[in-house]
Amino acid sequence: MPAVVASAPGRVNLIGEHTDYNGGLCLPLALPQRTTVTLSPRSDPDLKLSSAQEDDDWEGAVEDRPGGWAAYVAGVVQALREDGHDVPGFEASIDSDVPVGAGLSSSAALECAVATAVAALLGLDLADRSVRRRLADACIRAENDYVGAPTGGMDQSVAMLAQPGHALLLDFADGSATPVELPLEDAGLVVLVIDTRVSHDLTDGSYGDRRRESADAARALGIESLRNADAGRIEELADDVLRRRARHVLSENLRVLAAVGAIGDRDWRALARALDESHTSMRDDFEISSRELDLAVETARSAGALGARMTGGGFGGSALALVPRGDVEAVQSAVTVEFRYAGFAEPAYLLATPDAAARVESVS
Ligand code: GLA
Image (tube, rainbow, N blue to C red):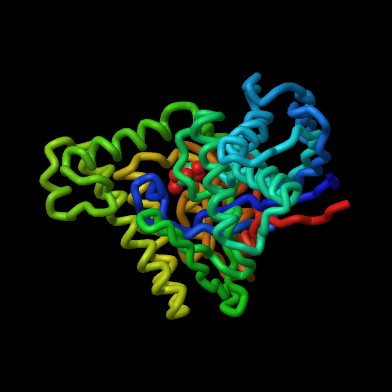
């Protein structure tokens, strides 16, 4: 069998947060930052893994259940073997410029790079979108069942299905993935990602709490998922927390549709409004923002951003801002100054130009 090099992107979610596991809508895009895996099969079923970003290598059987970063690789192998694929053991070396713990899906990038390399080894047709969909599903299972992070599927879906120059409208009710052209450059705009450097951990419980509260709210409303919730009935919920959680999910789905409409109309002010409203909803109703995220969003807006919101799972990680290209430096230095003043860590920045999904880089 040949050696394969494959890569997969990190992602940033333009809008539609904590909707994926509620049968809802979201609109992520793939980042230019990628994780690359160089994979050579070996004759026994075990794995030998190393990463340029980690001190320790890992070697063992999938059944040994490693912790940390190796779990994302072993979990994908386990999920693909469960799907009936004859996945050989392999040696893999990993390298990545996706920031870790920034809410930009470094874990999905790793899972999807591994799944893509293995798919190439097995001769699967990566030009077939249904093959990509199934690989994304295997990566989701790796993360939920093997790693134990109760995430919803947005990250792996966009990493496997994104198209350059497009955001991806994901509908978790019918499983569809629709590219939405995002001609920001023509409009002189960029999506600036502000990494607060407060790392978030999707296995630490707070993310799972929101997932549980969403399920409780759906149960209290007597419906399968919050996607089908009725606004009037939500407001009648006796429990204040469940009412606000459900209100966020319902209104966030509507904001995703508003954002897609605004992008189609090239109405960037309307897109910015949806971003701002999304942040307010996450701060007040879903309660997943933080002082750092609020400060990043408010400062970005007052320094020239059209709109801004926290992005990803919350409790740290990154915010994004829709910024006229000429104002990017002013926004960055304003946020950096305010963070220093508040005694927060030095933020980091990147520009989210919509890039390509996971791909095979070479086979030798
Ligand atoms: C994390 C999860 C996703 C999604 C977002 C919130 O990134 O991995 O599945 O739930 O949080 O929108």
